[in-house]
Amino acid sequence: MISLAAADRLERAGVRWQPRAGDRFVVRSRELAGEVFTVADMTIEAREYPTGTLLAFNGTTEWALDSVQIDQALWLPSEEQLRELLGASFRSLRRTGTGQFAVEASRPNGEPRVFAATSAPDAYAEALLDLVEWVRQSN
Image 1: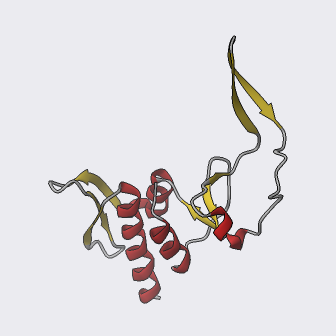
Image 2: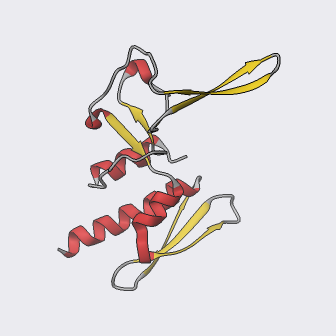
Image 3: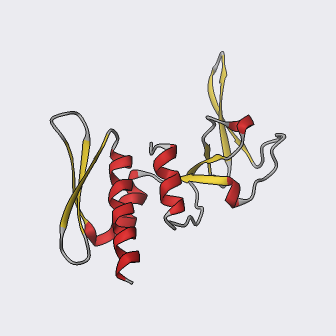
């Protein structure tokens, strides 16, 4: 999963989120620190019984937290979403000899770039941040 620091940098760089089912996010709140939420059309709970596991479909969850404004949420994009945002600039993802992940991407001018991080999502985020900054400076 992408680090909170990388997700925050993407948001500050202008990467916007259109929530869809399966997206993960955190709520900017001390009370909910460390809790990762998932956007879902329906909540499905696995309930264990002596006779086996039951998947319970719940339309809503009764909980003290009814809703939050999107600006109170920090999107945690997946590797797939980050790769999609990189688009045609993405070239490859590989593991380095030091155990890091390296994303190779090219800028719109064709210049190849490599971004390494301890997780694949963070390496993708670094590549996307570079692309966003390059586009911003080019305009």
